[in-house]
Image (cartoon, rainbow over all chains, first blue to last red; front, side, top):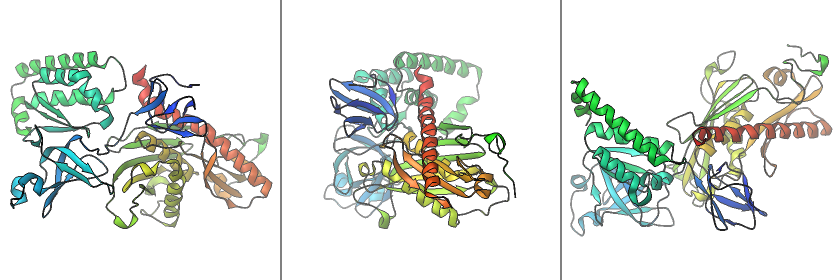
Length: 242
Length: 237
């Protein structure tokens, strides 16, 4: 017997179904009942019931691609913040090979890197690597933080949502699986992309989002052109920020 | 001393013996916290913020198999009639501890080993029953932060004032009354996570007070769930 509908909003402790169903992610079994452990939306697939969280923290998993910021330079490795309860390390050997070089000269504190999670061990030490296509250091651009569970929504089906934003704003956008988004383009366009991404994050659990994003984009971009023709001194301020 | 008149079987503030003060709960009001809640019950105004699970740097309290929960209950200097000296005191240290103890059984701490969940409870205005209000608000903030829990812990007090066993004591009833029994429960299973008793009660009165407190918890629990749903519900419809 099932007590909730697909896509219903549930809170921790809500009873979802009885033992006819399997307990998926975001749920737990208590006696004969399956209960929600999170605030989220119910997802029913065949006989498996799970809850998609509306808010979560990134837990590193081997193979994920993430965006991290360097927080410390140590003797033979860098420490990185990957927007998670567990900080990551990037061994110097991964960057230099066997060669001995000054770590400060390669990456310094505050640098933003695009990395792959190489390994997560039992003590939750997160080893990161830079080997792979497109991985490396970002130059310029802005960072936007979203909830990791909303990353698939931002990307859309086969990248439909993210490609639309890329095309409209002419920005380079990279989404890490840890919910960090890097955007680089013209300063004004970066602001537009930021607004749109924040809107997606806020409304990720609603339907018809793609259309609203399209409307918002055309509205924002329409305004941008108007502003450019009306206000002359504004581009100066934007350039300084960029 | 204020004399509580018990005419028409009503209390000084016009409530019935099994009536809560008017209350409201709001979730997700702080932008920078992972989860937050604001709660008003009677004259209490309480803000709760949750950060985490996040990295724990204090090695000696780190648990290799689960997260640790740290609570800080704090009363603003302007929260009471006479200015309260800021900073932790004996009372707030005790409440911080019992809050952490009351919330801990509900949280799936084993999902985040070697990390910490930090809960901050700020009392902006106090009017009796702040520890219960704090626990109730903290558990809404925890849910808002997306922390997996067995149930949302809810708390309410009962006690005895003017010879009557009553639900949800106000400040005057607490000060001049005979007893105060704060209770926190997990409403689905009815498991008790906090039970304190201050004052003198006969076993029968204690039983009655406990039942009243649990009844109060159940009423507040509904509103807790609504608070979370309202945060997302508006955009759903």
